Length: 83
Image (cartoon, helix red, strand yellow):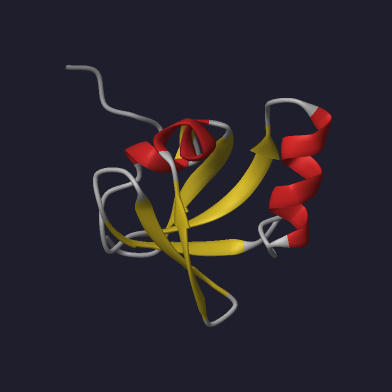
């Protein structure tokens, strides 16, 4: 197995539970990207993946948000923090 570079982008669904990531890119159609931004998940936002296997529970700006697997696949993050 090849190690993943520290700042590599991964879909939010692949971030380990309890880990924090910084949103770097939103993919998907324009309506999806706009809706996710309206929920507070925009580029440069810090997100903590609380847990789940779909829906995924994430904490953003003190709020917990549940995302489907398809939605979490479209949110690319870089892992930050010690986890």
